[in-house]
Image (tube, rainbow over all chains, first blue to last red; front, side):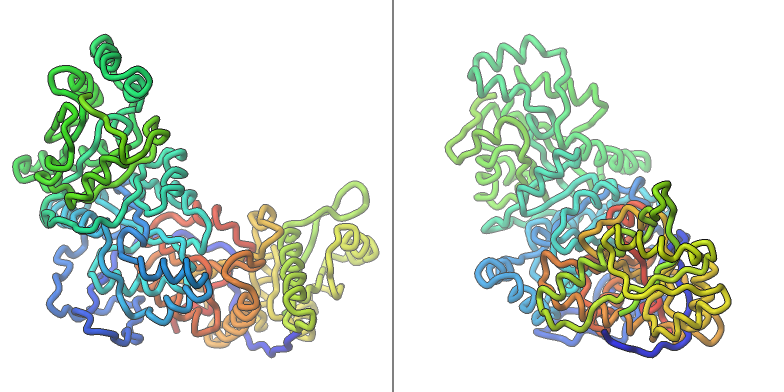
Length: 388
Length: 235
């Protein structure tokens, strides 16, 4: 037992009162580009509102605007560190040399920022939308709120903070769980979308009712718009339930057409990403209200194997009944999705079938897999969903 | 390391039922067991002292000791004191952490220079297999004039000891888990808090930067046995 002398101390209550939000005057505008390793600025306190030097990066122009929106008002997008950044090297250290070596490696390289990962352009686009929203509605909390989620232990999380600073990302909320599941926290933060590299965690989120998708690092990432967020969705088992897909898988194409025709006026049930499309729609309406329909920085796409003339009708009627607008609906009637997506260049494309996700990635589209529905039992590269 | 507990509820069988601090005591014991398992010669252990100022409990001191034994708890010392002297007792026994549900006792303790932490009803439903400590990165500090620096030092010493204990175990399957929550500030304030903890020898397992999001749900999920704040406040 260690004996230590004590000096007069203050009492700390076990409970801390809820404090009113303060809008800090500066956020994340740390210095310019990294040239190799650089000593992190240890003098920075972060608690006082002193102005930070802005060296060639954009300053936060909107003063007094909302920086920390309440979770219930914001569209919360939780992103795993493994999809926001590239962490393959570190993953390899973990897999080959074990956790202790991995932790050591992370701390050793703490001042080296990670490179952007597949979710990076998406997050940047969310920030661009936020900038436009703040211009039009400076007091509104209806913004995108990006939360970083990692299973890493917190003491190696400093490298993530350094990386966020380096890339000048506006991420002020994060969750480092030290190995436990973040799903409880995602629910507490009323997460609207969760992106992860781990399919199991994504599945866990989906069962808890949180829209989620698995992202992969494509070999090439085609350039996407910096000013307009583009989100593309598959129809069945993503926006809609997998009920029709079940028919197709069980009974084939003809039965599928028959079933869709018979049920044309019956709404499809909702799928896991419907809520996210809804959230996007709400933000879009804010731009329309200010006369910016033509210049809206959010654009949504439906990319489905359904046919426009037949099975697609049910999809459109369902969307209309839900009060959801989708900017472009592309009915491919079974044609491959890759070339179409290459034209659209979405920041993210959600599909329930790995076949399509891989096909899209081959052409440089950032695609995310939604592990939901009947297709998961049949997921393989040779599976096709022709002519729906 | 020494902790004091205070109070405990009665049950009809004549034994005291587990009070609020029960899971905490069990968790502290778990830590000791695991520490000794790693190193049978370990000297950095938790030493629990039970103190009570309630005269009724003192008259039935055998009941207390019986109850302790009945519940399988390891308490190294019992301290029956009156209200005026109990702080002296804390100081004489070199207590590093005083845990109580009594706000006045906590205030008195801290005024006399003992790191004092107020337990609340949430502690009763905390896990018993793992000690969970929560550091609050940017809490409001009720400061007494002139004691800010000393208070910080005492909290820092305790934290360093806790960090050392945590270091005896690997990243997973540890009987101690240390979490950090910053409520108001952005990522920089959380980053600073992590670095401060690291400088004290504390490697946090979990960190949550709330940036204004409500604390309640997070605290409910974390289930900390108690909270610490002073060592992270700015001077």
